[in-house]
Length: 249
Ligand code: OAD
Image (cartoon, rainbow, N blue to C red):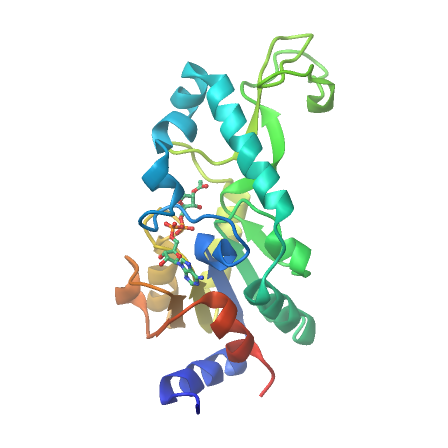
């Protein structure tokens, strides 16, 4: 089957962009076996209570339950491998140094394991931990020294470890968000892959790109909340579409 006009046009936009940003969400890792959040049936938030597991009050109320849930997700991420979509982005970056920046909402490390270097993480890193409360001691206690537990607890100050991810109600890492906004505001094209566009401020990056005059190309299996910002939408699976979209012409 010949690729359609839409596909050819999208490919041209991406290949012509001197500055390209890819905004990725859970959908890009779905074909690696990591569940998304909002897909009906399979999405994590259709099975689990987001506020109980992914908010500070939820963690403080039942730390063991939330810690165990993240430990399971962390083990799940470690069992997976990057898929063809992650690899296509990494290969594009390697072929065109300095032209592609990835901004991801994902807390997995599949972009990095695929070989992408220029990755801004908006929602943290599930493979890392940090203290739940600011450490009261000087020098600050080392998270590596936390005693085993669920969650591990500091033997010196009693602090608990938590996953180094952004929970509901928390602000995004300021430097990563500022860098993402700056990159999006000056890019020629924004490639949005596998996000429902329902979580802000990440979702706002599509509108920011559009208002700054960039082409906004959305790749998603289904409709998203930011489709109105798109200059073009390609419906389908990221691992099927990205290798062909980003392959050398
Ligand atoms: P969602 O679960 O909200 O959306 C996933 C999107 O991916 C949906 O629009 C699906 O249609 C699409 N999708 C699923 N499989 C796909 C595939 N194989 N190829 C292409 N698209 C596919 O995930 P996010 O938008 O990433 O927050 O969610 C945003 C944030 O909400 C997450 O970062 C997380 C969550 O609460 C934190 O971890 C802080």
